[in-house]
Length: 330
Image (cartoon, rainbow, N blue to C red; front, side):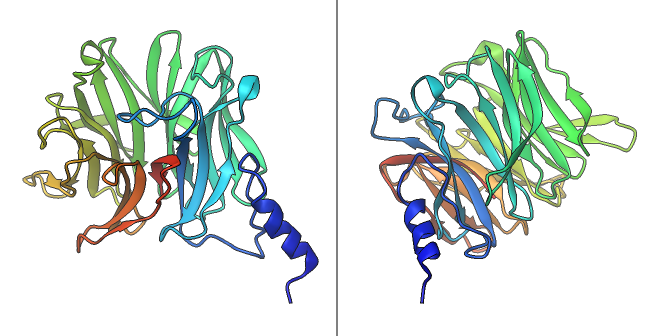
């Protein structure tokens, strides 16, 4: 028989979208959690059709990699107390998630921006990094938990930071003509997007760069995809053998597909993993490297999908038109 206390906990978890949905560890422990964000698709802050609502309104959700046990983790709040929550990542043990939080829901450069590490089950959190009058965003934790990358924008300077063991080991030099974000690490490599500032806007030209470091901190750069197209939101597999990213280089009409490149074969060409009239983006590798999760508007709404790379089997994980589901991390 279910106890009264347990019934109360289950009931409370569904009372409000503005509170944390708590699953006590003894009730449910996520085995293979996927962290992602959702934007209200019905209210005045609804996301735009092209780029899922970049400003404000982003909540953080968790689910199993098969789409089950979908739960709200954090809501940004509303009104003057609203925060901006940005690009969460989950640790390999499934116990914690990392995200950026802005005091200003409009992602302004005024106020304080923090990177948090928060317990998935208790809500206890610690500040990893804090900056005043800056933006900290696009935080990504490597699949082995060893490397943290994030973008820092302060006083007009845009830097992609790479940290190993809590210490900053690389500050990627960014020329004034470019901006860099979406860094993702594996081993001693970081893959990221580098955008020419002169092309910002509708004609965005973005390259995918792979930086590899040796034990002495020396860096070697490799261009994975050049500035001829809008290449962005790259991810690298845990073994550093493959890179996936979204690009409009293979489509007509400007929609994005997901491409995959085998880094171990120097003669290999990028392989198209998705081919659809709609947009596919924000790919992220599973820990075994055999699957990708990504966002797509192929159903008429932005939802999360999972693709098994060897077989091409595609599974839709979310299905709720009242939200835009985006930025999945595994």
